[in-house]
Amino acid sequence: MSMVQSVDHVALLPAYLAAGTAVLVLLVDLLLARPAATVAAAVTGAVATAVGAAAVGTLPDRRTFCVGADCSYVFGGRAALVAALVALLLVGVLALSGPLLRDGRTPVGEYCFLLACSMTGGVVLGAAGDLITLIVAVEVLTLPLYVLVGLRRGSLASAEAAVTFFVVSVVATTLTLLGAALLYAVSGALHLERLGGLLADGALLDVPLTTVAVTLVVAGLAFKVAAVPFHVWAPATYDGAPLPVAAYLSTASKLGGVVALLAVVQHALPAEVTGPVLATVAVLTMTVGNLVALRQRRTVRLLAWSSVAQAGYILAPLGALALADPDARTGAYAAALAYAVFFVLLELAAFAGVVALRPAGADGGTLDDLRGAARRHPWIGGGLAFALVGLAGLPPALAGLFAKVTVVRSLLGGEANWLALVVAVNAVIGLAYYLRVAASLYGPPGDTAAPAVRPGRAVIAALAVATLLAVVVGFAPQVVLDLAGG
Image (tube, rainbow, N blue to C red; front, side):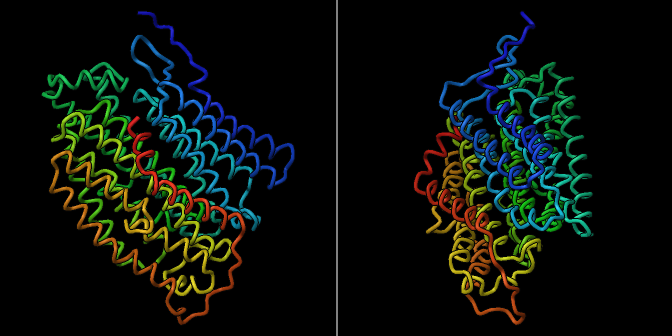
């Protein structure tokens, strides 16, 4: 067998564009030293990355860095969806960052460079074909966020959030790497498809080390999606980070964790082992997230705990894998990723609404600070209410409704009726806090006078675009499902 690896530069084009964006941002910041030009370079590079990913995604699957039949980089429809979505999320987060960057305390060049580096990891992650590429891509996505979380200078909460996020992420990475090393020791393979073939024959499953390795890999990646019991870092980190960074954590970072977990579960790890484990994790995650969210009074903490609950819904289809036939498994994989796509669009819209209704540079504040906000800013309040209703899974936000329907349908197809019932019950629990916050936006103002807010045009544009995209995918959910299943 030839050990010379072929290189397909067309397949690598989205990664080239993403990495080039980071380099471009550094050069523009160095040579021009104009914040507006630096942000424009980052936005232009992100849009180019999204367009490049979509263009390559229309072609048949392209493979590169191959040795024989095993390839470390496979770019297809699903990878294109992930890459384009991560790039567009970067554009949205940069739009939300306008008030943060204008106050002069945040270095614009470093901020845009770190976000562009994180985007590069997300673009590569969707096409990763072996465990090493997968883990490195996850870390490239995550590492810049350690710094971004701590950018609120003089804020003790921000410093604590950064340290917490760093420590937990290091532990999660250690577990994942140890699990990957043990899988290699057991099987001698690192490529996902070859590893899946070796584990499918059942002989290796009798080796106790295999179970330990699978558990460590799943546990390490569960940290990234903030699944219970690996979730405790999320609320404090989200609440301590600047609002745009919290939005990126809750969308692009969580999407990366879902894609990584989906890749190893679909291609490498045995369903009879991971299915029951992920079913248990999904039940705990959605239940704990919803019950704790009921008690939250701070806006970002409520969104953080609801994000934990949403992670449970995303993982639920994977919990039916042990019982499902191959066709039902394919539907479960598509349902998990499609739900993640619907979720990140609505979550970005929710954070955009909060940023627009808060003073420049402020944190998310309390729920009382948002009381009556829709009376003062009808369009912004309406956009935020739409996002909250969508996250609850109710019309007219059809994206959220179809997301829940997609998950339940995949569970019923996988003969996991009990898990579908748990999802339905938790969706009802979630209504209590989502609708309470949405209703308070139209209620009478709180006892304390709300500070005057002049939302920036970029923030309003981000809210409008995220809401529009949520409406569009709500009317065409099958397109997302087809891409997710590709």
